[in-house]
Length: 94
Length: 392
Image (tube, rainbow over all chains, first blue to last red):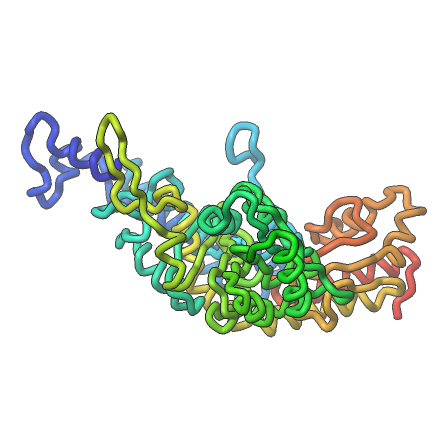
């Protein structure tokens, strides 16, 4: 038996209620507009870009003496993170 | 900095060059680290698990496709991911070994091979290594004959390590397999130090089983690994359950007994998958990795009194050295005793040599950049010079 699949179906068919499988946005029906997909994506994106920076630190350990290309990579990543942070700020704090 | 109450964040790889012998090939790729962020929750790959409810059938994330690609990459017929190489050994031993059966391993075998044999009720018998720390086909033949004489039956299984963990030597696996097959003994090739770091062709080796380690050599989170086999053996080792509950009458579909159903249900399998394109690529650069290993080994050999116990020139990135005639002579007089070496290395941003080791120890240079390799080699020489050792 697959527990994941069983759990999903039991929620969607609770008490013989409306079968949300027929809906295009079942999450919106069940939970309303509480979730900002844009904010979630921005959080993930920021974490991924920071991971790239983390790997730049690994690649250049122990001195972290970055060459020109690596400095450019770092600068690009930092700019990208800032953009994602701005989205998160916009979505979650304004 | 703590990542959770009482748990320090691990920044070893960011702060140091890590030459730990077992950690090098398992360092995650950036993609695997991102996957770990996204798939850290327990049963995270089960969101889209549909009938027949088995890991290797999941299409999203593309786990089914990953299994096919793994088999093709290793030139084997079928693959399953397992929680570490040891679970691969265990699955095969449990399938083929009966209580009291002799099972052939080698004198360089990893302890988990012994454990797998023991768990199945088997009796391990070791092929001796030769003077150059190699397992030869002739030695395998002699041992097989001796074991048949001792037990009056043919061993049901032989384990051989493609690259052993003690010396990092590459063994004549194809030759050993050829001998074993003359006695109809199936062979499990332990690829924990080869699959994922260097090219491995299961069919070319003649292997009945190839076992790999995700966390040792495939840039994957622990515990992860793979068990690959041929069509001839797949039905036995991956047999499906026939169990039925006597009260409930329940049956359990096509869950595989030796896999205990599903194996890697979250971050481990997705980590393996995310690293796989990079792993495929990096094995093509194996010669560069070996050259890096050689460079550091040469630096160590330039220190008078140092010996290399592994094959030389190097054919692998895992190397065993004997510094009793060099760094250990310093340790005898140094106020930090044997800890001076790891301490001096750490001061230069290098870690992974067991603190206190100045006699016989191992290191692994896999995955380091050319600049890092140079720094490691120069650091060894510099430490030697500063402590009064002769540089040849």
